[in-house]
Image 1 (spheres, rainbow, N blue to C red):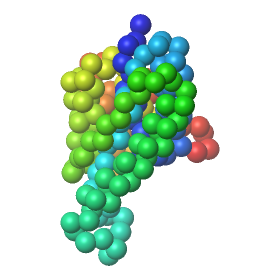
Image 2: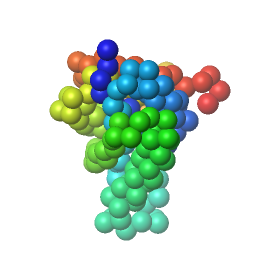
Image 3: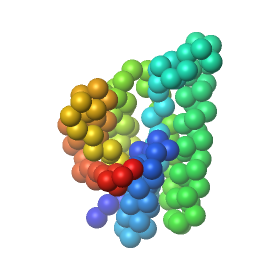
Length: 154
C-alpha cells in the first residue's frame, strides 16, 4: 500500500515513538523510509542568546539536526534492508507553521505517500503558546498522515 514513508524526528521521546512506528510500517510494507529533521536556528536565539554569536545559530541548529538524524538513521538502517533509508535536513528560520509547511512541501515533492510524526497532544494555554506542528501539517497536507501521540506521562 505504501511505498515511501516520511517520518519527522526532533530527538524527543515522542519523535522516537513515531520513528519506531515508521520503521515497523516500512518493514511490513517493504517501503522506503525518509527520516527528516527540520532545524530552526531561531530556537537557539531564544534558548541561549548569551552563549552563541549570531552567525553560530544556524551552525548550532545544523549540528543538532544532523546529530538527531544520525541517531534516527542508524536505528532505521539496523532494522531495514540496505538502500531503504534516506535522510534529509530542512532549515526553517521562522516558527512552527513554516517548519510544518516545509515538511509538507518536501513530502509532496519527493514522492512520499505517508507522513508520520509525533505530537505532544498539548491543549489549552500550552497549545495556544506553543502552536501545533502536527496540527499545521494536518491542515496543509493532502497526503495520509499518521500521528503518534506521546504517552500520558512523557
